[in-house]
Image: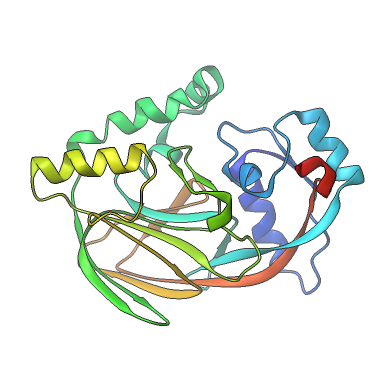
Length: 241
């Protein structure tokens, strides 16, 4: 069983994925954003989450593999604002909660830059300048990027991939900010797709974030969806309704 935030869960999942027959995972979310818990429908209330560990049903979920060396439960990302998730001081997160990430992200506004990157999936290849990229299996990433529940299936073996292109003009920037605010990802400034296996090759060295933790700096990153790799205790169908 895991008790804590997304970072704690990340460590537990990395341990479980290295076992030949991992046990069913019970999780009580007690972090700041709890993106993973939102995606799997776990209660935010600690008591109700504990009841789910006792009475819930075991469901298989997809797990991401990052460069054949570590696993992630809900997201691997690079570019603008990703640093905020691991650079925000812990005491600030304890005191301010989600607002601590917003304040830390504001510090990065002057540092926004694009990375020329080539994204290769099993079906296609894309090349552009991107200021942000997220490979996720979640309904929410950092509390900012949100997807509708009908678009995300945690058991389909596919990632939801969002790549934000670098704005070339003020009008493009304004349009991009609006589209992000209303969660519209079919925009000319946003590349949105699904994939089970992909490689991201950047001309520079972006910092990657894996489940909110620092994931290293690299030019070539390989991400694979391990379909239905772990079983987690989730609320019953009655509790979903």
